[in-house]
Image (cartoon, rainbow, N blue to C red):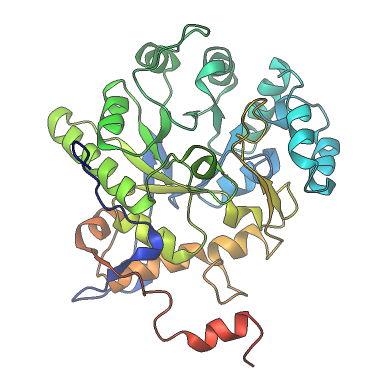
Length: 382
């Protein structure tokens, strides 16, 4: 097309990590990460989804070295007894669940419940991270800071520095971030330019990903998005060049599209400092959705961009993170898988992994020689 240039972009299933020339014992690998002054032993964030994160899940995740993001615009800040509405969502028929969720999320947010959920998590002596859209960030941010939140996630389908509106007040990102005084995770974005813009206004971390999540339908509804490997690489380049210019390090968090240990390893090889996902955690016994989770843009009153999906319960949060794995599909012992990937590339930590790991385009990486595995999945082989 004259005047248009199209470039090829890549997702997790289209690339592979090449093992290194040397290797290292996985027990000697350090995968810790940092957002602002908050240090995480494992670089995993659980997505701000009501079917994944409640106060109990956040506390358990924190004690295991990661962090779970609680959605301040979800059922936990709208209902004093959210279990009842969760039961309604989980048991609803597929043809009625969207309308039901839209109705449930019309209940006003209560400031006292916002304060309560933050203080409840904080009482467990773990870092507290909460999430809000820009539209409600001023009010919810102030309450969160005063209640003791350690991190605030400013999250919307697409976040930009340059937003305009004739109907709503536009959040001044730079002023908001300075006012909050705690590290701000900002997103979502998928390009070098927007990532750099968000770093310039003071974000401590950037969420990368538009529409890759299992419960998100943004790509189908809007046609908007960039595959995660390419998006992560572009935003990681912005991080590196911003660091050279300012001497300030901003973490890159690949958000969504990861269901197995391989996807997670590829996200880090692409340039991520941390990863955020919900699908794998929704399978935990401790997750409030009991094997169900739904996209947080699903309640939108005019254009829902999410869906409720059933993933089932596969084990405890500890098994999913640390094993021992009871499945052979890479959905458990995610920490062990990441450490082993680093070890095969001879990397002692995430930073070294990003530098040493060589990526190749390999669309057959998951299917080459796997004919019998494929046959078993469709009931043809024994």
